Amino acid sequence: MPSVKENVAVQTYKDVGHKEINIQKSIFYVASKRILDVACSLVGLFLLLPLILVISLLIKVEDRRGTILFSQTRIGKDGNTFSMYKFRSMVSNAEELKNSLLKNNEVDGPVFKIKNDPRVTKIGKFIRKTSLDELPQLINVLKGEMSLVGPRPPLPEEVAQYNSYEMQRLSVLPGLTCYWQVSGRSNLSFGEWVELDLKYIKERSMLVDLKLIFKTFFVLFGSKGAY
Image 1 (cartoon, rainbow, N blue to C red):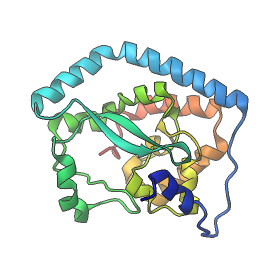
Image 2: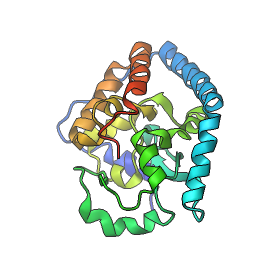
Image 3: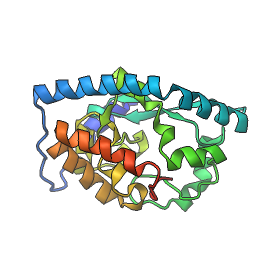
């Protein structure tokens, strides 16, 4: 059976009549972006350690059977797979219940999301609404699997449904935040999501990255599209 990466590579050559986008590949930009990623993730993990400990305790108190962190296989740059970390926001048997809820999907395209997902715990609702469930991904950033800014990393089953135009989302490192994250999130259609990601890939620069990081702080506690 071919690997996920092999499947991604095959689908990249599907012709759907879309023009290939130009990618910002400046060595100075790439190096500066990595320095920013490492510095900010180290500082972030240190300063947020008390909050991380409190969230960990609340997760364990509500559901002692499950783990504090949730590790999930995601697709990164060039179709490479990696384990993405999040605080667990669902019941411990959430993956087992997913198939029975597929008919309730409220998002178009190859993405599964339900606004009032019955699998989400009480603490899970709060950390999802505020995006605090994403904090462990600072570890992924340190490891070089993700960046602070970039397209959100998709699931293998989602990528399996991509056409060649959508595959271009995988041409750069995935990130913690992006245009989608600060522009409505799940209230946007999948097509709008893709266009925002490709807009970032074409326009990315240190200034764009810093603006998105800055803007993310202002939408975390007021995002109506986070679920």
